[in-house]
Length: 183
Image 1 (cartoon, rainbow, N blue to C red):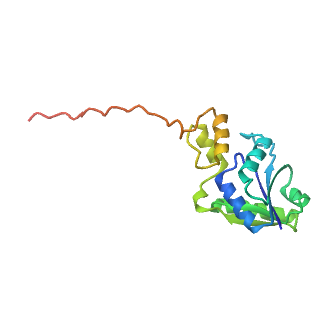
Image 2 (cartoon, one colour; image 1 turned 180 degrees about the vertical axis):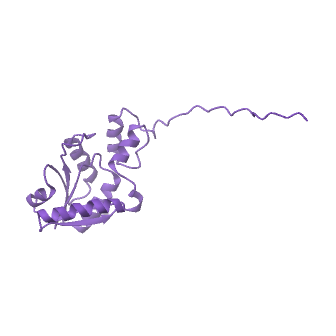
Image 3 (cartoon, rainbow, N blue to C red; image 1 turned 45 degrees about the vertical axis):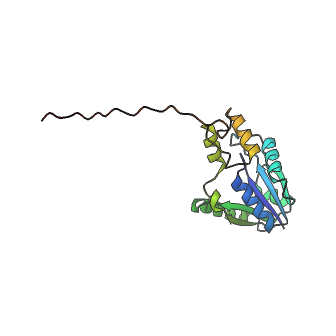
């Protein structure tokens, strides 16, 4: 059985990779499909994201990486996939994903959506969180693979905060401002 894991993956995170690995145990083939979304301004080009994902998943023999535009169900039909793989982090994800699954079902009754609950350690993680942390110089080394962290730091012209910790100036303590009262 073939599963499509669609998304923008800008960048791919350890949470995405956890889901891909788990999907590989459930399905014969998992196609990680990067959506070309003209309404978004991505940090990385589609080609860069494809290369990042290929490098991150090279140890998984049943993963393919591709890109597409248009409707996900149309892409799934072209690939002869039977399943759309989606991750759920929170109840809010479920509401959005369930609506999308129902919509996709109206477009193709042959394709099922399978939801996997995100592993606890990645329940807070999203690509936008990674970009936000990196944009302000925070460490993302624990959120994405090392080669992707390096790419992101280069985009924001930062070095890894783990390599160059931020130093702060110590503020001298305030003098005791209490005034003694005369008796």
